[in-house]
Picture 1 (cartoon, rainbow, N blue to C red):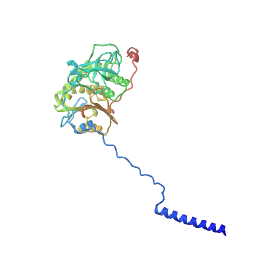
Picture 2: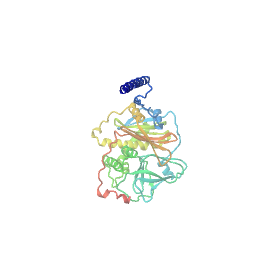
Picture 3: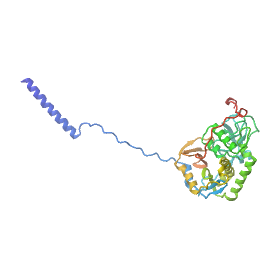
Picture 4: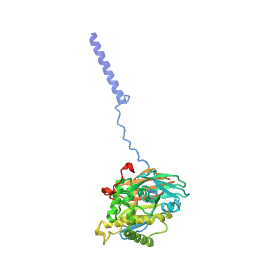
Length: 377
């Protein structure tokens, strides 16, 4: 009997336990299997403060003026945020307030500049600096403060067949590299790609240079005459006093834009910037015989506006500059550029259509034009 009683008691206890567990489960007293947490999608980060996008939204694009394959759309601003009269490189060199020299015995990718005056100097990326051991092109815009002291700035070589002391000091002939070289420099392309751009213009324009010098293209008598024709035509019919920049098309395609913070600053640079675009236009025509007699229809204002609006969808990042302010770089499919920003205002922005800037592979130099080993530079 005792074993049967124990078995009965065990059964009763087991039944009661099951009932209690079931009641507890139904009432939610026991922990259940944890349910998966909902996937929380964070909101997109706020749009970073972008002085270039703010400027582009305020720009007014004027109807284009067309001449011999080149179309210029002038840009105006309803209000000017920075009316400082910055000196240009050419002005400062003529006044003697700007000095440019080699870094020590010489270094290809750098020069030392110094502003001894009381007015800031705006040096444009793409300007050619002639002299020293070889001619260079300034990689980015640089704003030199008054009484700056020596400042090292990044440059690239545009005369790869020379590494010897030339005339004392550096000078400027108001030359700006054409878009293929200037756009490659500001986009951080390699030295080989810069040389490939120089070779491209020399071959297209049939300019011989024993040292592979880009300035030789600008100094060609035949091209100087053609560039003067462009300059005089646009000076008579195009420029407006309130213009702060321009969008430029070659044939039927937009190739670039330059925007300044005020009209006087644009007036200081517009002629030589126009010449750089005109040189590119001449080289483009020389490579396409079908354009000798008839150019494609020029783009309209809407095309220029769409080109500028591409900056609103671009990726941006800040870069350091050796002078005042900061550089705002941008990139999007088919577009590159940068803007020099000081006190939250754009001083100068340059934009390039990478759809048009196709850089060829550099061709090898003949032995008599080969650069010296890196250790000797």
